Amino acid sequence: MPEGKVKISRRGADRIRFGHLWVYRSDVRDVEAQSGDTVRVLDEGNNFIGRAFFSSRSQITLRLLTREDVPADTDFFRTRIQDAAEYRKKVVAGTDSYRLVYGESDLLPSIVVDRYSDYLVIQTLSQGAERRKQEILSLLIEMFSPRGILERNDPRVRELEGLERVNSLLYGEVPEQVTSTQKSTRFIHDLRTGQKTGGFLDQCENHLAAADYVSGEVLDAFTYHGGFALTVAPHAKYVEAIDLSAAAISAARENQKLNGFENVTFAEGNAFDALKAYDSSGRRFDAVILDPPAFAKNRESMPAAARGYKEINLRAMRILRPGGLLVTCSCSYHIPEPLFLQIVAEAATDSHRCVQVIERRTQSKDHPILLTMPETQYLKCLILRIL
View: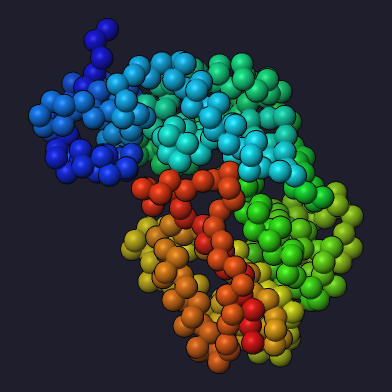
């Protein structure tokens, strides 16, 4: 069967030459390919640009695999996965749960593989990745010998590709709960129903960084399954952790039992209301941790998201004792770091507090950032001292 090909505009070709991996529909000039094909990409002069996944439905029509004129065959994918795995050996320590393949950042666009102990969870988020799913599955079994592989292909982005949202077992067996270790703290993950692929692996290093500074009385205002709360617990006098989700609080309490910490209290509640109530009542803490869900899902929601981030940071600063620690995060891609810093600075001004920046952090190293592709950076984490 002849190889498909797609011709793109000069703007699209320049985008690839400057290091981005996506070509949008508006820059496609001619298509000789079927949905999900791996295609040759040509510029307007019919010069070879690279090979890419082709999507007939998404605004992201092409996702570049390579600029080299080499076949994107099984050996190609084996090498890319092996490179990703070798990198993780260098940067992941003290945990058996991490992101093994991070899509575009590992030059495997729209393919995600997370490892939780002896189990893998995969996502194939484009037509091209879906077409190669069985090939990727076979390679993962061959290379890592997992006990089970689950697909969490339930993100809404699949609908933009015209793909079904599915959550199913692909290989072996995967139990209802998987226990993993992060340094000395253990966590239970539900790989089928938990957020993302079962947990927030991108925050693991930030959990540990916070523990280096935290002491005294701590408030964790968006605790989810207790990632921050339980990691900092050995260094704190007391941790109060709240979340709006009853299911999340139940899971956090199970994680607490697993670790045996008695100085943590988990409670169901609205973080905005709790911060406001503590501010009004004069309650004070030595550290406050803010790790809310993404407030900005798209560009249209940015103004409301900015107001939300300012509100929680302002309230947190007001309830911190002098010299207290604020760990504040945003996982909204549409709120870039400069804007997030501006929002936090405005909160400091309005709360009449001076703020020292101790650390400016991002996602864990197993979620590397591709320098020429800003879409691969989304998580911001600031560790601040409030004077």
